[in-house]
Image 1: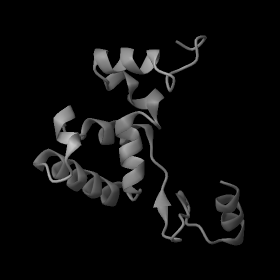
Image 2: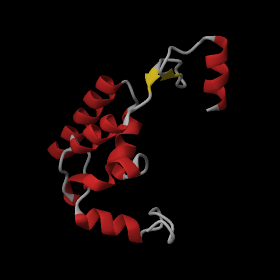
Image 3: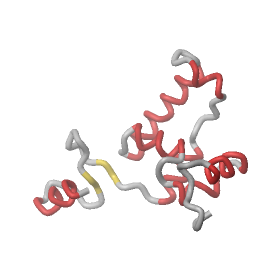
Image 4: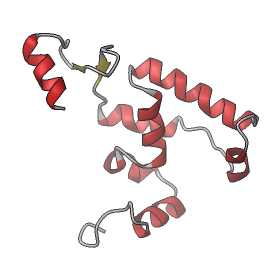
Length: 115
């Protein structure tokens, strides 16, 4: 964040965008964009995650790449939104009840006061 702010003060950053490691401009996601990305997540069964050659896994990778290009973010950003690492407050209302309960009871969920 500090390096992005320094780059901005030098004029290296376009309005509304941040620099990434490759110095390619990336846009900041809005709440609506994060929700749309979460809702575009393909349904992948647990067994589909065990093998990289599985059709479902390849479909998920293709969707992730397409969304990353569309929203000008990295594929890691897309994966983090899908996995509940980032933008949780934006996407939580769209999670399944089971996923929401699992998240809130896990170590990566909200603190006891926020639950």
